[in-house]
Amino acid sequence: MKKKLIAGNWKMNASLAANESLVRALQAGLAANPARCDVAVCVSAPYLAQLQGLLAPGGMALGAQDVSAFEAGAYTGEVSASMLKEFGVRYCLVGHSERRLYHGESDALVASKAQRALAAGITPIVCIGETLAEREAGRTEEVVKRQLAAVIAANGHCVSEIVVAYEPVWAIGTGKTASPEQAQQVHAVLRAQLQAASAHAERIQILYGGSMNAANAEQLLAQADIDGGLIGGAALKSADFLTIIAAAQ
Ligand code: PGA
Image (cartoon, rainbow, N blue to C red; front, side, top):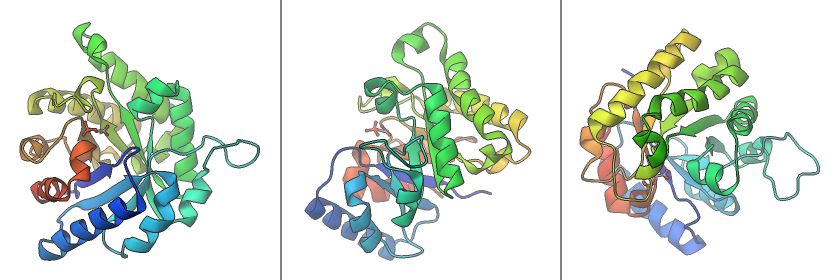
């Protein structure tokens, strides 16, 4: 059975002092109760060097929250995949709904970002998910399949190297979680789409994200096609994040 992945998305919540105490608390917890899954923390770019210093080899992996779709050059403010790689970045979120919403990121741009990450040897965690209006209009499958199709088309057989995160937009930061059945239903659709695109689709981890917490993680992670979680709010509290990690066998 493939390992699950629990990834914390700290979003724009960090400081040198807060990061250090959170990482130390997580490391102490994992030393006492070692993880049986892969664990990553995705931090804002200015803190990558700090985290690279704090994280030990073989322990939690380092993740970034975004990457440029360009390789290098006159792109002020952008951070390239090769820059991330220099700081030991193993995973990079692409297409988080907050980037799609506040920065107008299109399916095509998200697909190029995934491509850049893969080319640099970084695993993109491709985020997809429907809004409340789309779900209520019965368009959930159509939307997530369209978002994933763009990434499959741009990446060909390399798609087996990505991680997918299904994050219904209406569940992010709202305390409203998709029920395990609702999430599993969408994950099964995504798995089938990946299987049609790659002979190695079985090994692709499909994470659920959206108000996953210490209380609901176990049930969500027990679903057949839920291979981990992308955790926002609950990843900032060491005890909660450790409980979620322990729930991922
Ligand atoms: P949440 O965020 O767990 O706070 O809902 C998840 C995410 O946005 O990745």
